[in-house]
Length: 229
Image 1 (tube, rainbow, N blue to C red):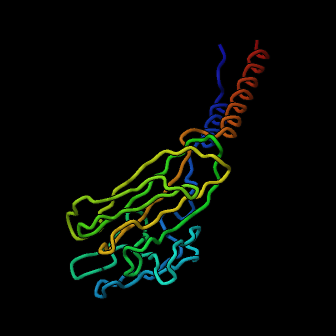
Image 2 (cartoon, rainbow, N blue to C red):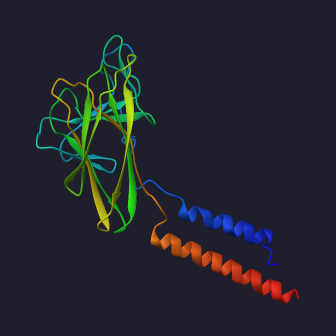
Image 3 (cartoon, rainbow, N blue to C red):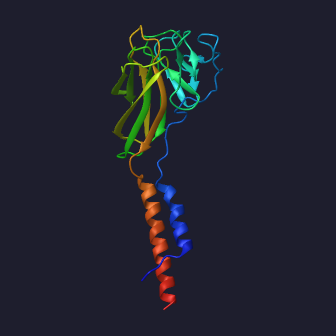
């Protein structure tokens, strides 16, 4: 009977990370650049506005307006004497309504590498405040893919986050992902946070690498087994 040595088991364990799924999105939680923190006694303190063409740590701001913006805000930024905007992940999040420019189709876009024919999972969170429906349009390679709307009744005075998950199949070696504000003009907050894209199964190169590793270890074990006879 073929037995695996401790060194072989460790080697197999070392191969496991090959099939680990990694987030293909850079700065998915908008932690870069670091913005000024909020001050509990000052409304709308902290944060930073970004305009069309600006870079946000891997994202590019999009939109037809030169005066409208998107806004990175810090966790627990006060927007009234009783309400604060919180984040879903990390210390910062993005508000697609910007600094008082609700209703304008501003957004952010990022290009990332993909494998044609490979299926990926897109996951992100949309945040709404004070029962105002937050709606985001999602574009893949310039075409409308989904519209994600968070209109859940808020229970409290902080941002309520809802996760949206979609599958898509890549058609080229790179894919562009764009999020666009789709909320009405009266909506003050349209939060976006924790954007994640991962392959649903190991990509072809990973499968080849893993399979080759198993074959090599099995062959080596068989040779040692024969030499011991």
